Length: 512
Image (tube, rainbow, N blue to C red):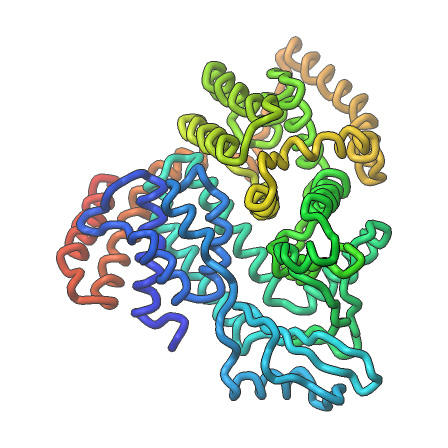
C-alpha cells in the first residue's frame, strides 16, 4: 500500500482527531467522535512503526489523556511480524554483497517496527547479533512525518498557545528521534559513543563489528542474558529484583542528571541481566543529550522539591520553560505543594503516588504550561523505569531513590563538566562589556542622543500583528483544503466537507 493511500491517511486523521478531542476534553468535533481506547490501539498498530512509537511517547503524557486511554496506549508493544522473505533477501543482499557469516538464522530472535535481529556466526568464529533495517522503512517514516506535520498545522489553530506548543514539541522531538532511529549509521555512532562514555559504569554494551555495519545492518557481539523483568529465572540465579532495580536507577541518574547523555528506550527487551548479575544494555537507536542549563535546572527542581523550597522550585520551573514567567502565584503554590507531597511521604505506595502525579498534571492544565523538548524522552524513560519498579516492588518511589545518588555526586553533576565551566567563564568575562554598554545607553539617553535601530530578525511585535491578520486566512485555506481532502478519502463525509468549506470561506471573508 502507498504511504499516501487515502485509506491510510483516513486512519491517520481518525487517530489524530481522537488525540485532539482527548486533549481538548471535547466529546466530538462537528459529527466526528473519538475512537474508543481499543479502537485507537488497533488503528495505531495498523498504521505501523511511526505511530506505534509516537503513541509510546504520548503514553507518558498524563496531562493530555484520561486513565483508560493512557492504559490502552501503554499496552502497545513495538513487536510485529518479521519481514516478508522477498524483503529480507533484498535487504540482506544490499547489506552484505559478500557474506561474512558461516551461519545465519533467517528466523529473527526479535522483530520490531524499525528492524529485526538475527543470530549468526562470523567466518572468524564469533557469535553475533545482526540487526537488519526493514525494507523502505526510512521512506515510510519520512512520509509519516509529513502527514503528521500537515495535520498538526490543521489542528494547531484550535489549541491554546501553550497546549499547541507542547503538542508541537512532542511531534518535532518525535520526528527528530525516529529519523535518527532509522539511520543505522547513527545508531552505530551512538553505541560507540555510549560505550566510551560509560566504560567504567559496570554496565555491559555490545561490541560492534564496524567493518560489517552499514545503513541497513549493524553487526555486534551476541550478549547472553535474561530479560530484566524475567523474575523467575533471575530468582533461580539468586539475583534480587530490588538489587538490579537499584543498579538501573543509579545508572539512569548518572546518565540523565550527571552526564546529560542517556539511552531513551529502557524497556525490558533492551535490558538484560547476565548470570553474574551485570546489567546489559541493548539498542542504541534512541539516545539523547540534555543541555547543561536544562540538566542543572532539573537538578534544582528535584532538590527544591525535596527541601520544600518554594522559591527555588518556581525559579527552576520557569528556567526550564515549564511554566510562564507571568503564571499566577496561587496556582504555582498549588503546583509546588503537590510536588512536595510526592517527595515528602516516605510511605507513599505506588497507587497513591500515581494519583498524586495525575493530580499534579491536572493542576497544570490551568497554567500557561509548556513541556520542553528535552524533557519528552526523559519523561518516557522515567515512566518505563517507574513502571518496572511499581509493578514488582511494593511502595516503590523512584523519585525519592535518586536523591541519595544526587547528593553524593552533586559537585560532579553541577561543576565537574569542563564545558559547563567554560560556559560560566564566558558569562563572567562578558559582564564588564555589558556594564559598559549599559553606561553608554544611559549617557545617550540623558543627552537626548539615544537612537533605536530595529533589527529585521527580531521584529517580534510586527510579526505578531501580521500573524493576527494572516492567521484567519491560513485557517480558512486549511479548512478548504481539508474539505476537498475528506471528499477524496470518503464520499460519505460530504456534509462535513461542506461545513469545513463554508467555515473556511467565512474565515477568509471576515479577515479581509
